[in-house]
Length: 93
Image 1 (cartoon, rainbow, N blue to C red):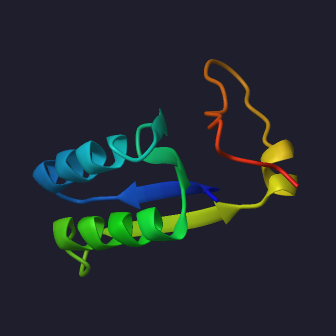
Image 2: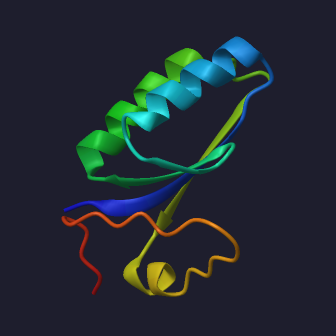
């Protein structure tokens, strides 16, 4: 079963930034310039982390993965344009 992750990044090099964003687009929805919402199971999360680790320079780049449980997802507030990306395989308990 998948879980919603908010993936945030701060990449110092424009080329690496583009590659990280392109990789993340295969796994989720871009909701802000450096923020993606991704519905991932454990295998997908592991694959994503491995792919991104190969793209960044850990001495100056930063990636963060925030898992959200059902209670957290239900409490998300959005002001302005945009909406929460919903995955049909994602279940709230």
